[in-house]
View 1 (tube, rainbow, N blue to C red):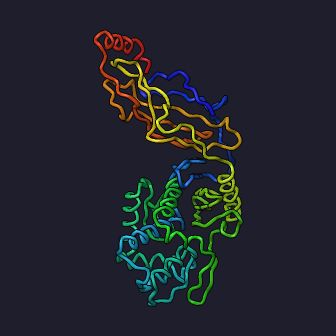
View 2: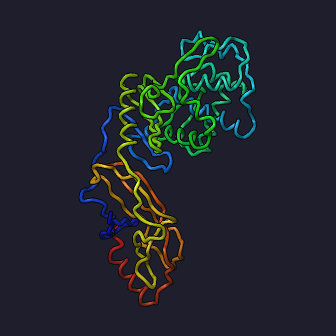
View 3: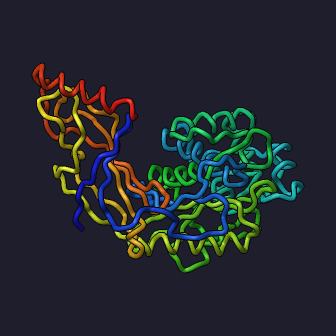
Length: 388
C-alpha cells in the first residue's frame, strides 16, 4: 500500500492528511444494539471499535474484575498466598451468601476458605460472598477494600472507575466505563497470566454445589476464555469478553443491552467480527520518513518525521475506504529542532473510531535560520497566524 502526503491544514494544532483511501471515514464498520462498546486488540492496543465508550455506567458484577486485580497484585507482590485462608463473617454470609438471593458460592457461616477457592468462586460463579470475605480479610472492612480498589484503579491508569464495594452491587458513586473495563481486562491478561486462566474455567464446585461459569461466551466455539458479566437497572446487561483466535486476542466490553440473551448474541457477533475482519499491516518501516512538520525560524521550512520503530496498523479486510490517518502536531515547530525531538503523532481512524496513535519524532536537526529567513517566517505568521 502506498501513502502520499496531502496539503497541511493551518491551525495551532497542525494536521497533515495521509491518503489511505479514496473516501473519508464517516461511519462505523459494525452495528450493534449495545449502547456502549469498546473493543481492542490486546497485544498492540489498537482500538477496533468504539461507541460511547467513555460514558460513566454502574459496573454491576463486572466490578469484580477490579476486586481480583487487587487480589492478584497482592499475590504477585508476595503479600498473599493462594493457601491463605479467610473466615466467612456474618456480614459476608448475609449480604453475599445464601440468604442474599444474589450470586453466591454458598460459603458456610464462620467457615475458613482457602484464597484460591475464593478466587474461583468469584471468577467462575461471580460469588458476592467470596468478594466480601476477601475484602474483609484483606482490608478489615469492605469500605476499606473498595478504597483500595479505587486507588489501584488510578495506579493502573483508570481515571473514571470508582468503587464503593467489592461486589458491584448497586451503590451511589460507583461507576466505570466500557473503555476502562476493557483496558482492565487487557491488564489482567497481560500482567497476571498465572491467574487469568481462572476466567476460562467452565465450572467450579464448592460446598458440594457445582455451578457453571456465568460467562455465556465460554460455551460458544469462538475461542473465548473470559471474563465477566453484569447487569443493572440503570445500564442494562453488560459483558467483558476475551477471544483468542489464531494468535489474535481481542477484548471487548459492552453495556446497555436489553437481556442476557441479547447480551450473549451481540457479544458473540462483535468478538467474532473483531478477530476475523482485520489484518495487521506494516505501513512504515523502521527509520522510514512518515511526513513533515512546518518549522518557524529555521534554516529549512520543514522537518521530516519518523517513529521510533516500524508502524503497523490493523486494516479492515473489507471496507478499507473507512480508514484514514493524519499527522498531528502543535506548530509551526520553533527552531532549533534537535534530531529525536518529540514533534507530533500519527493518528489512525477506522470509521469514526480513533484506532491508533503513534508518537513521531524529528528525523533530523534543523538549525536557527539567518535573520532574513526568520524575518520572512515572522511576516508569514503575521499574514496567516490570525486564521488559527
